[in-house]
Length: 229
Image (tube, rainbow, N blue to C red; front, side, top):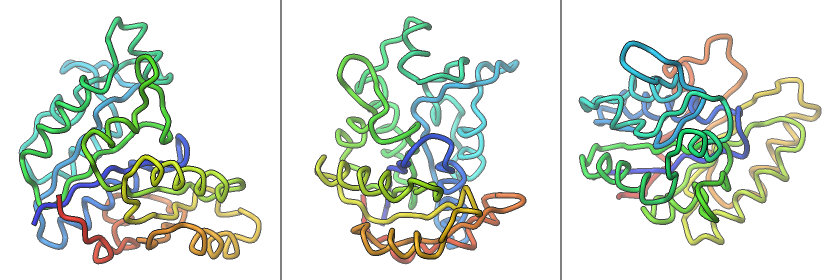
């Protein structure tokens, strides 16, 4: 059975990659083959091999399939700005077709467990009126939502979940990533999220000194995911 999921976030810098890499590591520990895609990334470093993104490299490091970097992250931009602005400056048309094809190529490899990580939140712009969510819609991928737990996260999480469901995609799980451990009434906030989000919680990831994929994976439960590709 092959499973594939789109990993979305409630905002930028809330731990999507941390959780996505943890999910891949948990799948590896369960004996599953793994693959990943980060179709567009900005804030990339120039190396002797070309532009490289830390998030994409983290995902690639958890893939058991032999994938080239360019397969995982086909569109990479140097400026640490919104992807549609970085693409515009580079003269690249960042539309759904430019991202759907490379991601489909990863899905076609039929790994047991595949994650496709978005950039920023659910409505990150592409060219024209398209958004990154349109790629998930085009591929009909079930969604895992990473909630960056801090002040304001309940509103962000509920609005994102509503948008995902309104777009016709299943929300199959969510992960609470504690980005601010000093959040007032933390346990009450987590309980409220569990009450309002219409999907099972796959885990609560605390603020870790070293948020390695192995460390994060110990807080995640893949058994709650039952959506074959």
